[in-house]
Image (cartoon, rainbow, N blue to C red; front, side, top):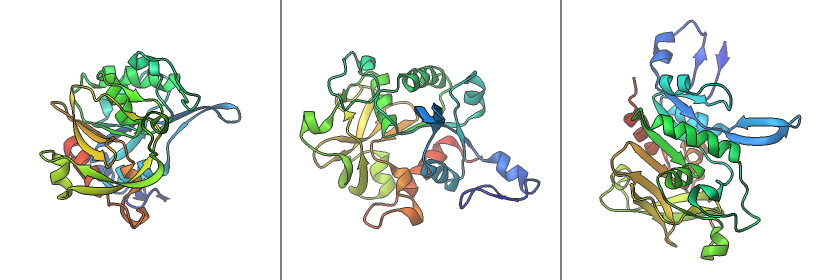
Length: 253
């Protein structure tokens, strides 16, 4: 008998196998730490990502940093680009400006290859925090390398309001003009790639969500996986709806 997550796989493996097999498989990129455990590279992510996808009816799959990713892409129905360290500014034709910029080039190169391959499939993508930043620069946008220095505002470990843009499905999804979200980043979208529209902004004008104009791709700068159900801080907006939206885009099987 095994128990994983609150609404994940449970009971005997022999029971309900058809139901589990029909769950959409969601490929997820993990955080790369070069010397985390036994001075060896570590790949992983916080539990919230797994739990949010599982509660929405999906089967989360962590992409390994080795071997051929083609089989993972083929077997998966949706892709989540998760949070993590900063992206090499070389990807948007800049040099590192500040000592606060922490680069994981191994991850950058992996996700560049992943997107090159994934976009050929036309399957949905959901970017979170670093995910919105990587999608933005992949499609030709740029980033603030350090928001406090360049913009004079703090977006790290704070809670703030987010204004949803009229005419976007995100505004309709929440049936509200305003959300209250977490904020855990020191970098952010500077020039938004032409392929995207802004779906939400913070009160100080930072891009907090974006939607691709033609492809099934959207992303948030805040962390919705930390604002689900019974572990959501009381003052923050429940983000269950955004994971349900992603699973609807993917197809629930």
